[in-house]
Image: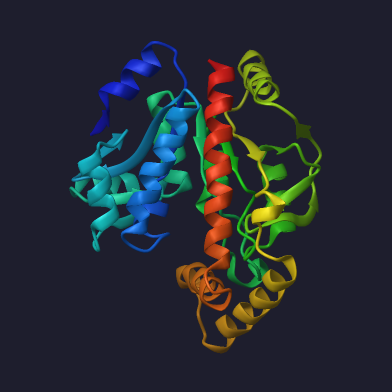
Length: 299
């Protein structure tokens, strides 16, 4: 049920750099046909940096580590492609489902295949009004028990960022800013929260990974928080205003549970006239290239 492409398998066996890429952004994060173009762009960016891309998804009940062009097209085009977190994988594999993997699903499968570096956009986290809803992303628990480096632009700013950082600390997940002392907020370079550690080069990150392995102990992720370039971020004032509007609309319309995140993200895209989506893509582009450089420094 776990199929590793020949290219990825050979790279892992030959200790060449490999970068895991999630597929949710392809299936659910972008309009068609732009989503396929972006998926191919991300893979090409990894190759330009000297690493092998391993886009991950489930196709007809098989967990695929490294997709070919036809499989990428299928994930990008399929209206029925499901969103799969780690908890969904046994069900998807047993029922022959096709689905795109979230952060938790991708990290789990990547680590299972022997891939140490994973590039994504923004992590899930603790949702606002957690004391009432008890709503927390499965990403956090999975990262607390998976030894993988996740290069991301922080957590989605629609979440409770301070609470998410506290939760990561409680779970023993290390967080380091990349060339920053501020925790990024996905669409914006600074969420308003500090980070305790800052790393300044791919070699610095690789050294932390080697230290993790030398120390042993519980398996847990390293979060490499790489801010979107300031020139590409969503204007912070616009971000704050539209996010406040989105949160009010969510409450007024009675949106709850799993519907909250897509509602808020769609609201941001519409009310910023696509600027939030452009910032999203700029963040992922930077994360993909940084992840490839880290993978090259680590092997």
